[in-house]
Image (tube, rainbow, N blue to C red; front, side, top):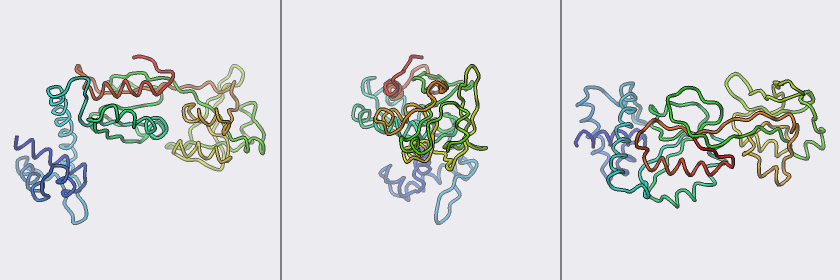
Length: 298
């Protein structure tokens, strides 16, 4: 148990980035946390931190050990939960990874309802568009838009999102409304930045698929900012339908090239294989499935 307490102090110090903040979380003094980590380093025979006057930095051994410790503590949390709570009362820390646009525009507005329903949960939500290894990162659930590779993870399909080309009424009044993909060459097309440049738009012209590279005055790697730029009349944006549903219904944005916009992408929730799915994961999967109107089963 001493080793487990030392490991807990180490993981908390990594999460908080500071012994003092970790100590507050553990109801200990900063010196007690420091001693526990020192004992752990002595037991392991390696240095886990590079200590400076300004910050704590993990050594390479420390990073490897931290990933393993996260899994150990997560397994312990699962065991404690199964003993102390029924399936109707999930508790503990729930780590969710999601793309920025889903986190900001879909999850965030609905989280008060979810957290009020499950007051014993502690949600840790990380928003980033890079693909991560959930085992290494210690994530319980990953949300992903697009086709999935063979990851060995369990996938639950939440729904499908369609790509929509849209612009503000003001922009269309000034520049005209495109009726074919070829017309986009004379328009400001707002680009979503990825490594290597802005993502192409896939449109239909007759029976052929047309790939359009956006050329315009703005290219940005944040979906909500791209939507806001379209609302401000800066150009035509190529966005997921769930991002602009309210704006389209209100007339703040207008869909263009509707017959040509046929590209769609699946939305999945992924989690590591587990014969006994923790109740905190189960209730979150059930909750997030309600947020997409085209929700489907596994």
